[in-house]
Each structure stands twice: as structure tokens, then as C-alpha cells.
Image 1 (cartoon, rainbow, N blue to C red):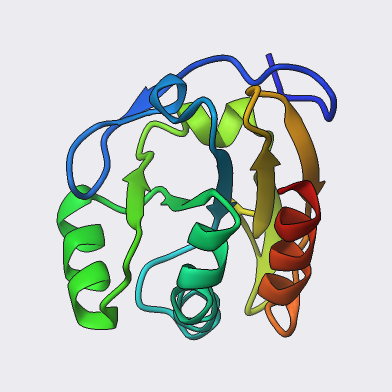
Image 2: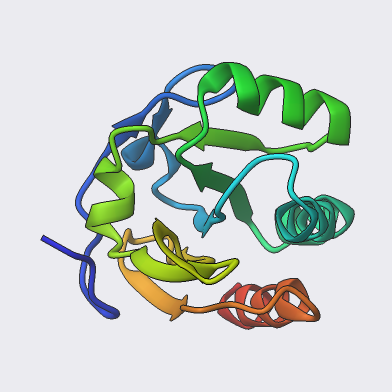
Length: 154
């Protein structure tokens, strides 16, 4: 079952840096869930850095930021430490969340068709409903757009 804007996002628990992430334990806060293809790649590093740079503003607006990819927890721990991300990263190697949020797509990489995560961001409101989604995200200015939306929600 995939998520729909305006509907409650089903609760989930997922392995993350800093321990398991439980969606329901964040009720009352806005949750920004951003899906990205791969740790330590240029676009994903830039996007993560953009979220990190604006982390205090997200927190001030009552939002929790969490990154999600199929990378292992070990890869996430290294990426988070190297980049000094002030937020957690969820490891989804079995694509449970990726499928729930319908972010797995066929993409062209160097002329070959590969299955991977389509860069996407989801904002879950304090009541647990999906408030907004961005799919097929381009990194430049994206985080500012998400921040403006979160601030307007607050």
C-alpha cells in the first residue's frame, strides 16, 4: 500500500543510525523523510549537506529530518560521521519503505536501465498525515522549498 497526500501514513519502524526509527514516536512533530539514491555520491552529499545546513531552521519549525536509502547501516554511519549530519539516516536494504512511498524507478545510468531510488521528499504533518510530496527532485534549491513548506505548516 503506497502513501497518499492527505491520508495517514501507516506507522513503521526501520533500522537507522542512532537506533531504530519509529514513526509513531514522532507524532506531534512534522517529519521530513527524504529518499536519496546512494551514500557518498555527489548529488546525495549535496542534498544531505543542504538539509544539515538548515537543520536548526527545520528544528525551530518543529520538524524532524530523516534521510532514507538502500545503503547498509554501516555505510550510513560512515556517511553521517564524515558529513557531520545532525539527523539520522534510515537503512532500507529490503526496500520496504521505498515500496511504501513508491520511490523505486527504472533510471538510465550511462546508457543502461537500472532500478534505483527516485530522489523524493515527503512531509508528514504532526497528526501523521502526508502533507506534501516532491518526486523526481532536483537538488538545487529543493531544501529551501521544503523548509518554506514546513515553516508554513508550523
